[in-house]
Length: 443
Image 1 (tube, helix red, strand yellow):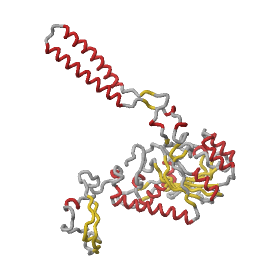
Image 2: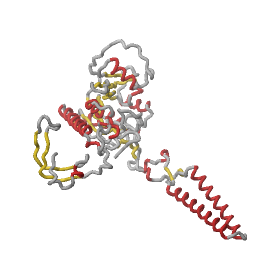
Image 3: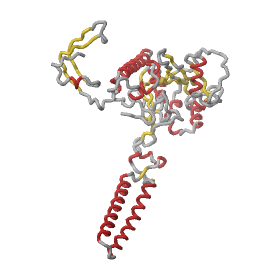
Image 4: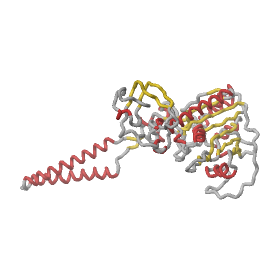
């Protein structure tokens, strides 16, 4: 943008700094091939200038690393990198809806707040309004040991120094000694008052989690931020056919990694009259002996190390893993005839090499998880009991089996990882507008 100083409403020093916002009216001009820019705007009128505080603006430095930009999620869209990622994310979002609408899927908004533990074993965020209230049984929150000792010591000193003052008053001691003793007593009294004031500023009571009476809560029962919307989506699939949902899902998992956040955007699909018995092209090959840090054992979930070996080292392509042990998948997944495994699968994507310097590999891992869901009332009821879950919590879900049950399947796609794969970035927190992870929820 080229601005003549005669039309600028403010000084050049207020327009030139990085971060300044201007609205200009003018003529676009194509520059010669020798110029650094292809086009320029020759301003004829300046309609607005939003100045910037240079000393406080976090993007004054050029090429601020992405991990540093995460501290300013409200400012980082102004960078070329993040704005480009946002455009890609928006396009993928639109393409997702376009695809499902094209093939006759209906979009259903499932609840974010739920009273159902949708997975049965995931770490959940609890939703409650009780924390600002006190219960009948309260646990005192005392001051620290150091504060208690200081307060007791101050009170003991007051008693001792008061006795000294009284003794000096009764004796024939000089006036100066009495004045010094009185001043010392006053200082100790002031110290004691400060400690007591600090005590009063601290919370007086705390409610124990196990003492919360959820009958008094907003929903009248325990509620959570949803981990998965597939159970709710099922109720619509059993009525109107193929459906999908697209929205945030939440896990209170404290894992810190480049692929994990607490708020995950997920595409979830449910299809009525659908079985998982699709034809899979299985490549049978001898897998050489391989030593893992975590040994493979039946019934134990595969680790990221195991998945990485299969997709990155052995097959070097996307891999579908299916028929998982029943203990490692949710209670609602259909039990296979062998009684040991369930009709579930995962699509694992290998690391991506983007052929740039320095050498960069993007670790992706599991992008899609899916399953055929149990249609038998008796089997599902037994599985809920095996997971030691409350039947009352799932009565509404069991109703779907009591009244017109149907075979159905579905899957979940981690949208954020798809954006990561598309952009070539290495940390999922850099492709989410306002990422939330353990210990971090800026803005």
